[in-house]
Image (cartoon, rainbow, N blue to C red; front, side, top):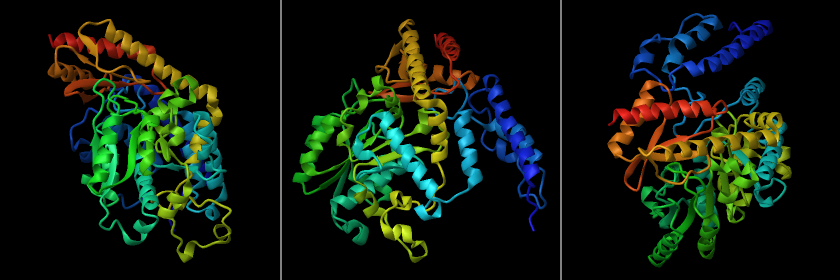
Amino acid sequence: MADHMTPDEFRRQGHAAIDWIADYWASLDDLPVRAQVAPGDVRRELPTSAPETGEPFEAVLADLDRIVVPGLTHWQHPRFFAYFPANSSPAAILGDLLSSGIGAQGMIWATSPAVTEVEQVVLDWFAEALGLPDAFRSDGAGGGVIQDTASTATFTALLSALHRASEGDVRVHGLGDVPWRVYGSTQAHSSLVKAAMIAGLGEDAVRSIDIDPVTQAMDVDALRDAIVEDVEAGLRPVMVHVAAGSTSTGAMDDIAAVAEVVREWGVWLHVDAAWAGVAAVCPEHRDHLAGVEAADSFVTNPHKWLLTTFDCSTFWVRDRAALTGALSILPEYLRNAATESGEVVDYRDWHPQLGRRFRAIKLWAVMRTYGLEGLRAHIRSGVELAEHVADLVAADDRFEMVTEPALSLVVFRLASGDEQTLAAMEAVNASGVAYLSHTTVNGRAAIRLAVGSWRTTAADIDLTWRALQEAAAAQG
């Protein structure tokens, strides 16, 4: 029989693991943000085969310090400003720990009723906190579910759209020879194309719509022209992807205007607010979601900017019939009285996966321990710090803004050119002081600085800015 930890040993090692995490957080300010290893460095430190006999857990913690930490890019570092934040918080980590300890499978209501019902209630709370329409609540025709990522949510939305548009034919007979068409701006997340690939439509089914060069938002007139052109050519529009906070610059597509365009053809409207959607917990930061009441589906990620450990992507639909119609399947071994009664939700029908863990605990823990006031304070802090960055850019004539700040995202560059911009960014990244990422806007390189960590302060912004100024000076 395997040698399992005793309850007392588990308690002791559990305390040691929590102590390790707390010490790790305390050490972050002094660690280089970006990993300072070359390809293969970490692999060479690891044995080529698993140990034949068990080792003490202390050895695992020791190797975290010796092998793993030097090979990490520290996403919870207060000066991690690249991509978008992958948030965490003490409450979320403890919630995740509880979920792991419970170890329940929530694939259907019957396998753990609390897993389903807590998730339904928490998502109703969250929808209300964001100001989402009542149609997304679980007590109506729609409802919400926690996905792993927004990529899965987009794929699920596309499957739902195909089911509705084909009146169920796609799930039975496949795509057939219908020339389906999907739309998103040139700034739409890459997961849109991947969704089309996985669904069997292929990359060519995705039509990229031009953007306004100033706002980087979708050109709604161009969308209308594209749909008309495709319909006249015998193509079948099935879904439009709207970005409420694009990855590149945080651009906000006009949801209401897009909804008005697609209404005539009954096209599924999916709103991807993966990063920016959570800002709507603050009433003053809801403008970018105007028109969301017309959306068929909506996704935002608490694991990006709302203090919730990855993975936690909240996804709502207006009418669950298309979603469950596309994905519901009931083998004999899952049949049960609760499902047969029609009185419960079986979340296995709400995403491609069958198995699902108790993700709702960590969001529940975050919402309860911070309260809506605490969540709003976190979002407002990120926006204020981004405004501080924009002020610093304006005060140094070597730098210039590329787009208007979008919530907690600032996009800027060196006025001297692309080469200098990227070289300055890389110098800061290589130094370990901070970590920034880049994009291209209207053909020119730009630096993205996305604020969002729960540990970032104005001092971290100032330290990063001094490093950028020094790097700019070195460019001449």
